[in-house]
Length: 125
Image 1 (tube, rainbow, N blue to C red):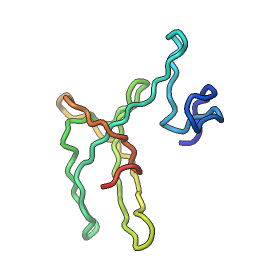
Image 2: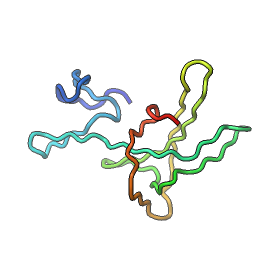
Image 3: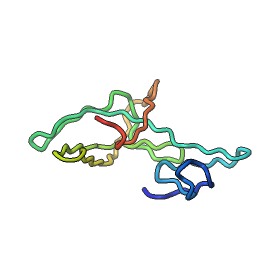
Image 4: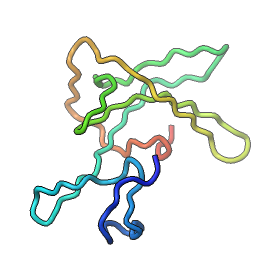
């Protein structure tokens, strides 16, 4: 991550330096008169949770039928293992490990997609 797409002046409060950051940078569609900016739609679903005991854990997958890992110009679906480390002082530490997940044998269909931020650091679990 880091600073990525250059944005026009006054696109959003706080971004007056003309930059967008990381995944949050909107994409400009120039075929529309006056310009159109598309911002990524985020969605996320948690799978199983379990404390680590004896160095091994088994986690249940999310309940919805998600496809495996996808990265294209239109859509990106990625899977992550999130390790939450509780501390006596300060908040928890989060370790996020990206996972490559194969597609299921059957088509993935999600009738009602969860609408939430989809950012690990903004969710409490």
